[in-house]
Image 1 (cartoon, rainbow, N blue to C red):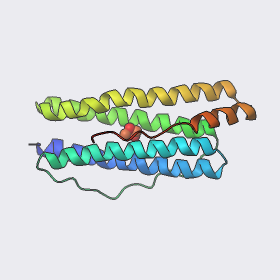
Image 2: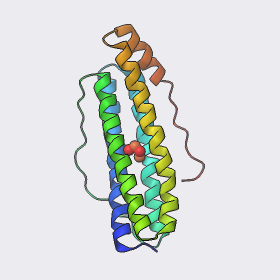
Image 3: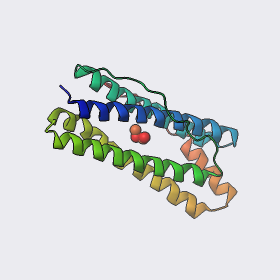
Image 4: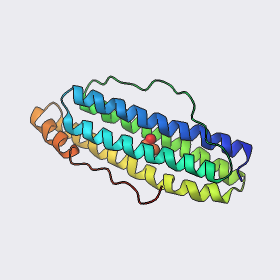
Length: 169
Ligand code: OFO
């Protein structure tokens, strides 16, 4: 059973995960339009991962006898200046998500909601990986600078990312 406050916080965050999916879908199309085909693939994989995150919240809320409700959302950004800009915005967004997950966990601890704490642990770990991946790409892009060949090589590398569907959501 979820308290009213934990339910509201989980449902709000479920919608934020959906926003993340929409943001990365926009980024994928924008990267494609700018000729960064590999990055377009990377953001498409990211979109699919966010849909998994969204579904995890959706299923968890419903499994607790509450009702997951999809809400209207803000319009995600759709225009980016450079590859570096794409990934700086991605890191900024993921740092925001990390703060949201931390706040949610604190709320669950405060209310002695152990089931929700356990559910959120997966996301606490996932956010470390999300931020680390973005920082690594930003580091490479800063080394590459304006070198077109370097950017092309990195874009090719980003094109190799593959979505691995989880066995259970
Ligand atoms: Fe769901 O981790 Fe990114 O946003």
